[in-house]
Length: 297
Ligand code: ADP
Image (cartoon, rainbow, N blue to C red; front, side, top):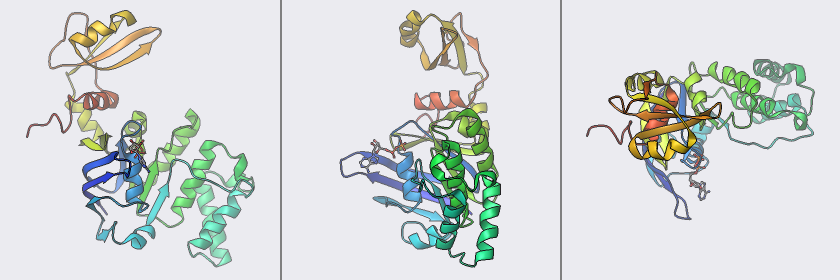
């Protein structure tokens, strides 16, 4: 199963162009869509989830035309939006049972066993009798995964899932997602680089509606070897360094400023080479040193 997105563009009524000629091929497995807030991730995720239509372009999931055959997509789609409402006074077990009925699992015994298997899988079995209103953010997200999994989706769309989760919840949630990505297409949209580096075998970087890079994270990191340089400076020296060098990121570390600079050779005395990571890929791509903008025609 592969998802093919070809030339997809979208401009909202207010004139904001949220997607510009997006073309991506997404194989089975975990795929990361990485970009800052406002980049167009949710617009693309909602379009894939058949909740809105592109102005131009085509989307195919295997043989299915996602724009024209919405019902066929919905039968095989699991969608976990950024935030979803739950009925606060209902227990996890009751609500999942209710969604199972909507999925057509009407026989009581079959429904019980499906609900039990899913609640165990997302590690909510022990709290199945608790009301959803008392669930933490992470528990709620895992409940969302259980709902999304009810239909055995071949396309699973997860939009900004880790925003607002504490570190332990985040790890638990990412582990759960990583089990899904074996036979189906799982797309994870996020602005958090670690979400992608920990989980995804393929990824794209999007900014202002445009795909800047489509890559395998490990290869993209390899491609930056020997090109990332680091220097620890005083904050007051930052403006000068930024004027003279291609600074891709700055970070505070124990009160001092660590700058990463892109360059084919040692930028200046005082810099040292660093092993690149996915954050360097992300920031150098956003700064225009890497990726499609930079590619030879
Ligand atoms: P992301 O998910 O990466 O944060 P979005 O797809 O939500 O990005 O938004 C992309 C751009 O489109 C932003 O500039 C946003 O303000 C705008 N946008 C999103 N939804 C709408 C809408 N329904 N109407 C008008 N503009 C929108």
